[in-house]
Image (cartoon, rainbow, N blue to C red; front, side):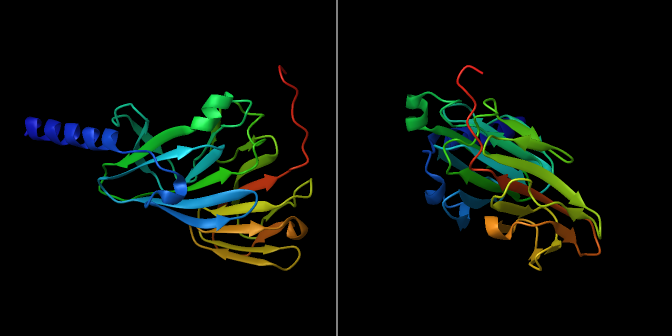
Length: 238
């Protein structure tokens, strides 16, 4: 029995190592949800014993859609290290010029996910098209409720609204990206209604950004990215 398990693990590792990293749009486990001049947003779904190896060339973040465990590895390394993930947990990786050399930016960074558990693994992956995103957090970071992360050019917040509670409009005028972690029934101050299921996304243009209230009967949890494109860059050597 032990030999069989070891053989299976070695086979899975060799298959994952043999994979070639592809761009997000070309990886079949990633499905494009939204694309504009600020972001590309993908839904990743891995069924049991599936894996994906992708190459990133811009700063990105991921939002886990359920509690669970997933193998994450860097290209060229063995896919054996398991990581616990929690619903709504948001991780950011900086690939801007502050964080990477020009050669690293050209080559990109490749990493993989492998699901060896009996349940599906799902996340939302957001690729930031603005090359300045990330200058404020060169090491990247992870947030979970009730926290926020200033990326430079954008703020990411993990929001939980009780029924009737409101989330304020952004202090600076800018577009917003909403990623549903739970079922959402939100109403903006301008009358816009946002009804979404977990894993759905909504793009709010800068002219429509407003305070939103939870009109549902249950708590509403979502990740919101507020874009501040006019935020000045920090000086080199800060």
